[in-house]
Image 1 (spheres, rainbow, N blue to C red):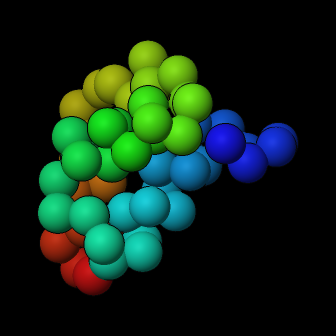
Image 2 (image 1 turned 45 degrees about the vertical axis):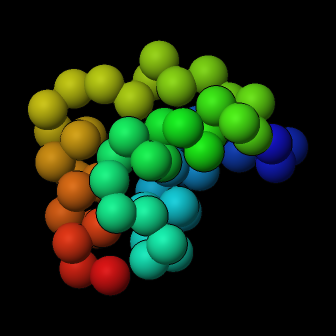
Length: 56
């Protein structure tokens, strides 16, 4: 876990890395890194993450 980085910020960073093919894969990684993934809910957020994954 990176100090002062929220789970949401880290999720976008992971999505932009091009290393993840699904939002679930990002959630799993966040959990392993010690983040609370309860912030990662909602249609709009999931759609944004999927779009980023698709573009990379």
